[in-house]
Length: 113
Image 1 (spheres, helix red, strand yellow):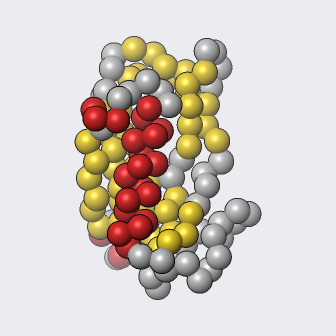
Image 2: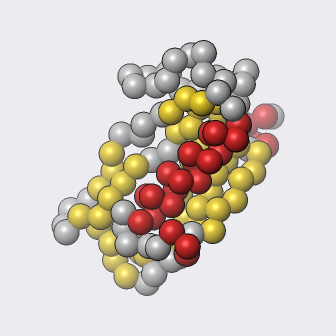
């Protein structure tokens, strides 16, 4: 598994790329089991009230979450490209510019034990 982590404005979002041979999530809407790489991450957006209050750039932002939308890919490069774009899009949905988002990719060693 690869963790794709975006950080900006004092907050972080992390999603997971399941690689070939790993057990990707199997729930309604999950991609075909034959997908070599599967990207899964929260989706959210800013709302006027309600939701979960998050600190973003020192200010309270009300955030509502959507069900994760897993996506399958044939190659690692496709999955990582989509993951980076997804993370930047989520930050944009709460008012953070894409160029402010720092993205890292790391192997999830904890899951391998």
